[in-house]
Amino acid sequence: MTPTIPTTDAFIPPDSLPTTAPTPKVDVVQLEAWLAELKRLREERPYPPEFDSERLADTNWFFEQCNAHALVRYVGRFIAIRRQQIVGDDIDPTWLELSLARKHPELNPDQFLIEFVD
Image 1 (cartoon, rainbow, N blue to C red):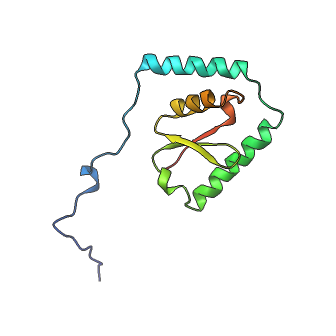
Image 2 (cartoon, helix red, strand yellow):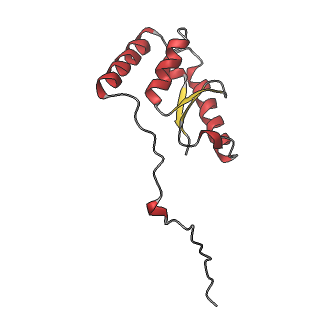
Image 3 (tube, rainbow, N blue to C red):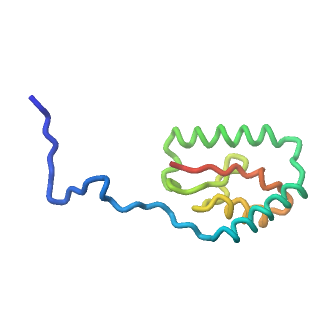
């Protein structure tokens, strides 16, 4: 016997669903300015000695959280992680990194692990 799939009048084919992709916040000129500022901040702020071990711990934590389905509320967004904690989220990874670097002048921008949650 062939299984049947129930249909209703409310069925909408997947290819006709509206996309929920975020719209960009900035134009190319603004993005280039942000990238230039991040480059300058990276050069001014050295990596701490524990950078590699902290980065690895944050990366492992991110994948553990993904596997545990603990990041569902951030699906479709970028999150910033530092010391196994989410410290920010946004639809724009460059802005997220820059805003955190501005907020924490003692840190190199790379000390925030920026990941997309899908």
